[in-house]
Length: 114
Image (cartoon, rainbow, N blue to C red; front, side, top):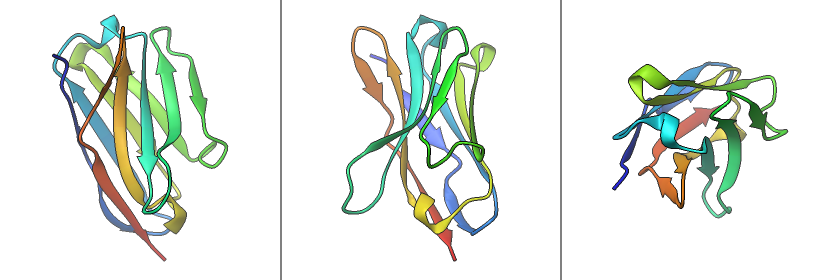
């Protein structure tokens, strides 16, 4: 069973930065892709950023130019660098890993005050 553990969330002011981490219990090179998602109160979960095994990335339009997804295979860790945070970025952020099925972490809260 794959376990994903997120960390790095917190309360920040608008314009500040945070870096989220997601540590996997197994070799992340076995995953087809890894991604960050978020869910704000009363809204559906949405894809924020995704990275493939080759390192190609895609971002939601709302975070392009502000967020950067990356992975450290040696540490089995996925990252999300979030800069210029806005109040609308407030959400629970989840990492996911896809193989024959999708595995999810438990989420980490990000709150951006105005």
